[in-house]
Each structure stands twice: as structure tokens, then as C-alpha cells.
Image (cartoon, rainbow, N blue to C red; front, side, top):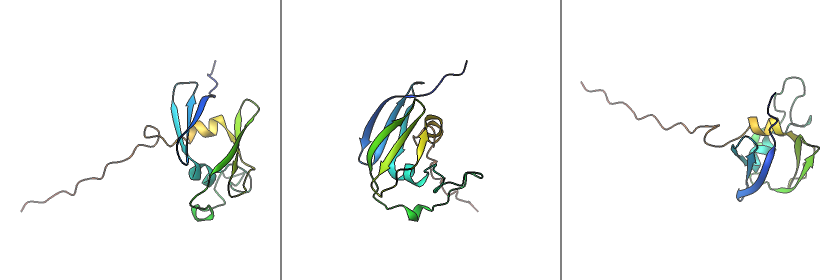
Length: 117
């Protein structure tokens, strides 16, 4: 039987960053602007290809979540400060799009090699 992932707790980690504690123990990190830029609604994301219809520049630099509503037992709906509120973010979508250092590792800069002649 597959484990159903669901949020156990949510908190604001800092201004503009949502933290979600998942039922599998993972602590997810979600910058609000990232969530808004990757909205899964039909106006923001092509339903057939999954390609974004919006660009990062379409979203204000400072966008906030004004309200979060549960959608059944499978998703969250965010009401953003730019007036957008049609995206339904399934738990699976959120978990797959976690932006924590484990899910999206920061690559250290490669030191420039020195050639000795």
C-alpha cells in the first residue's frame, strides 16, 4: 500500500517562506514567489504540456500569501496578494516541488583550476 503524503504542520519559516512538515517526516520549504511562479492552474500552466504560460517577470517581486485553504484532503489553495487565487496545489505537487537544500541541492562553485607550466 502506498503511503499517502499529507501536511502535518505548516509554519512561516521567514517572511515569504512557507514550511510544511510532511507525514513522511520531510520538512518542505516553499518560497511564496516560487509557489506563485509555478501555479498549476490552467491560466498559468498549459494543461496538456505542463509548460508554464507565465514568466518569472509576470509575478511581482514581493508577493505574499493572504490566505491558505484546504481543498478536500488532497490539496491547498493559496490566495496571493497579486489577486491570483485559482491554483489548486495538490499535496503530491507540493512535495515534488519542495525547494529545501535536500530536494534542490546548492552546487558549490567549482574552483578554477590552475595550470602549471
